[in-house]
Amino acid sequence: MLRDLAMVLGVTATLVLHPLHTTLTQLEYRAADETVRVTVRAFADDFTAAAGGAADSVAARYLRSMVTLTGRDDRRLPLAWCGVRQTGDLLWLCLQAPAPGGLAGIRIEARQLFERYSDQINIVQANYAGRDVSLLFVRGDAARALP
Picture 1 (tube, rainbow, N blue to C red):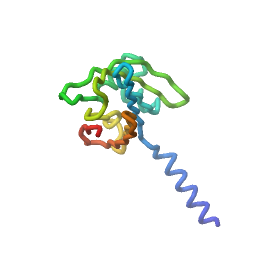
Picture 2: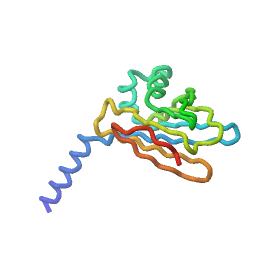
Picture 3: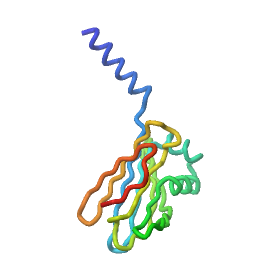
Picture 4: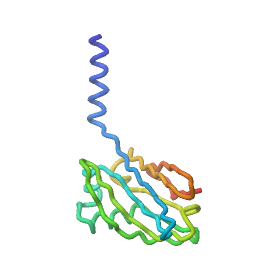
């Protein structure tokens, strides 16, 4: 029993000392105005350390350099800042872009925080045309097209 308790405490201590480094990026296609809303959920302390601050202009510049959307014509979609909100220790950062013709075939790259954490994992979820798509990005991954 005592050995089991020590093992559980050891695992718990490891989890506390080694946090999970992830972000979640959600792409929502809005057919009414043919735009895509990009919402990135990140831990506030990790994001502000990587971005160099918490000001909107700083956060927007960093996020636009790390999250890119490329259209079927190989042109980058212009990502406009639409704000940030904080819930506890999480930030919800918003970008939006025109996406005429929908999201199918658009390439995404999600590199946020890779320069900071070697074990960073960025999950991208897209909802469009009645489908749900999930992509996983780790350091070194190239952009991927949405099916």
